[in-house]
Image 1 (cartoon, rainbow, N blue to C red):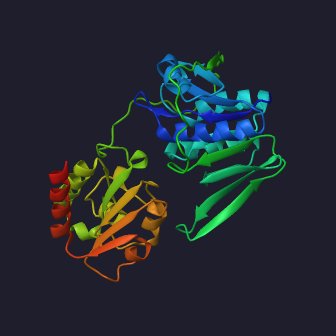
Image 2: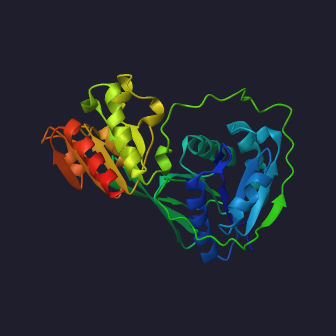
Image 3: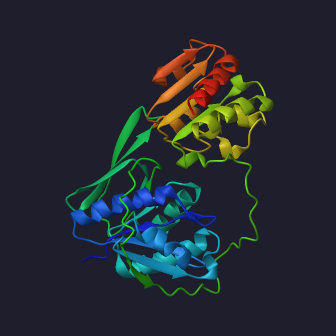
Length: 327
């Protein structure tokens, strides 16, 4: 077998990120089509915490880097470890979730390996020996086809929720290769001294199946409670538009849009959001969009599957009450 398709397993607070498992499903498909291995790259201070959790999703091999240098993500440490191994083994591709850390690392790997980067993609397939991907642009109005030609290794970042989770097999045991890593005396320029948890919602935005977001129409921070009540009834995450964040009503961790997070839930409920292009960029891949706005001419209605024209302060509590009746 060739060196195969590698996937970075991103984890946070002891939990594997869903997008990494989605990327693993893609890697398994691409690898199988070329009789290659699908390998999970696992970097952590204690890799044993994650081996079994990743193994049930079926990678052919887990390349495990265990070192205190990986207690927290830093681009220098991760890039040094991955690039050293990739330069020696030349995998066909390295796939990373398009999270904040993933976007940072993907660029670092591409630069260090002098490799092409297919960024924020929603589909990937082989075209003979080259990888071809599609990525939405201009708030989803345009879909670009991008191809990596003549590359030994291609770096790919995948948009969360764009790919299905692979099937699990609790009885499966993946081969684990422990890769020795010695942090260089110089070259790792940052050290994480601690972490302050953002005051985000109860459910991570990018991994939620349902997102309820509020915009300028919420009129103030105190009114986001009615969105949280609706979100609780739907087991959803709460988001916000840039206007709401800039007004100081919500933490930036809740911002959906071009300068915030990109989400693709099964259901996106937009409350008091006009539909500015920078917001649409962050939620246009939602499977189903429900918009609530008192302005019938609001641009959000052009993108919504269903729209309710009316007072959100009457509609949202009524929706919540009906959902609680059926619970």
